[in-house]
Length: 253
Ligand code: SAH
Figure 1 (cartoon, rainbow, N blue to C red):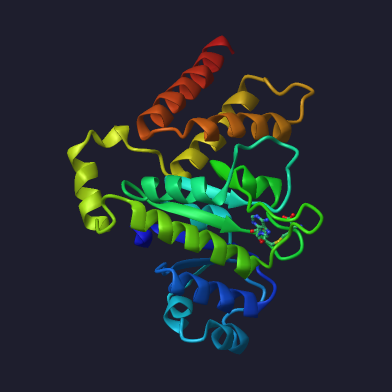
Figure 2 (cartoon, helix red, strand yellow):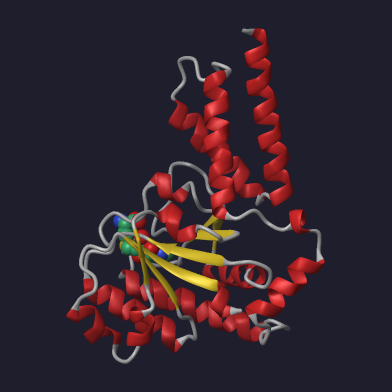
């Protein structure tokens, strides 16, 4: 099920780090690399640091935004070297790997790594269900991004080896899904993003924001929804409620 887990690197500055991350992935049996707006890629340095993991680099998908990178994923974890102002649930790498492997049995999962200097923005963290922090020396907590990829990929491998259905293919997973009610499956990141946009629009339409900052309210609401890990059916019920609220407003006019 490791083939259902993508590693996403956001806006990486140094091509050497992209290559080292690809090598770390291949060592641990992961192959799906997505690069969000890399500063310098493809590059000779990335291939030279990949040391034989050029297939992972060659197949890496390059996209403009994190939203594109996580489209289709039902479980997204962000990595962080430090505490954040807004409270996302924070997991240790072992728990993160166990949960990601579990989620990858019935959908697609992603682990997102940030920029070398500044990590992930709050807006990017809002697209994650939870955060993972590698416990380090508090006086020197920030790992090189490829080293962080190595730690997480190692934990993913251990978790996959531990899993009773370690050999299940993505096709098997999809068939299992089809057997269940299709709406009971976890919502994908793009479905949830569409719901957020609808929620934002609805709150604007009913003049909810008033003097409050829409971004702050939306960040809180996204944190709330991300903690619950919504299903496709729940997203559709919520959107029905938003449409009804928008419709009521139209009636009142
Ligand atoms: N000042 C930045 C450091 C970025 S380090 C910050 O606090 O976020 C670059 C990337 O490496 C991070 O975005 C994260 O993806 C990963 N990383 C580094 N140290 C980490 C740690 N202790 N736990 C989890 N991820 C870490």
